[in-house]
Image (tube, rainbow, N blue to C red; front, side, top):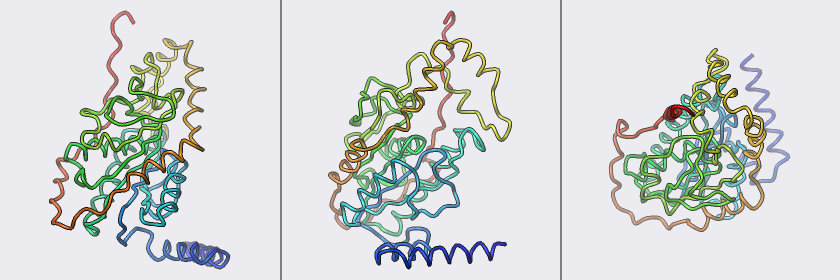
Length: 314
């Protein structure tokens, strides 16, 4: 069965290569020969898809995941390949096969490990980061760690970052686009210390009607049960869900309907996202010995903290 699958896949790639332009055919052959990035570029764009948009067995060269793929391909084309996207593939199955916390942490360590590997084999390379939804959560935690000197690469190696619908949205020191401001708050906890040294290099793209990155204040105490849910493992806190719906019944349906807005990022929003990365492309740093990577035990991938308990009488 496996041999038949491999043969069919090879035949499909061969047919696609035959029908593609020379450049496209070369990309397809490169993907088959080596699914992971193993050549140096001036700059790597760490591209982190959202929940449900990737899987751990996919190759990091394969463009997958809405929003971030459009940003990454725009950047790659506009810079004529000088900024090379690297797609982070991870167990993006929150709420179903894994709890959100477990899925996010798996994605964090995949992204961190990829940056560490690329920095090791390409010591002159710099990085940018982009992520959407759960991918923005992962990207925000990476930026937080790097910006405070405990990440996989030094802060001076990161040129820019664009986070689309970041669940950690707050006054983290970055810039804002698409409507939200520093007064809005995402569904997850604020990052201690914000983006640190990287603040001026980060763009948060968030619609004001997107509850993932701009959650109404009355719902912020009700997030934690959802983060623990893994339905396929039987982890569904129904009693807590019922209590939340009973307490917030007038606003439950409007909130659920507003989740649709979470998918509505496109057009000018993504064009501006790509331009942010392109315009902040820094020259290669002077060639000098790189500092040793931080010990892995110093790098933290904080799981979303439990929401604070409601105040008595509320």
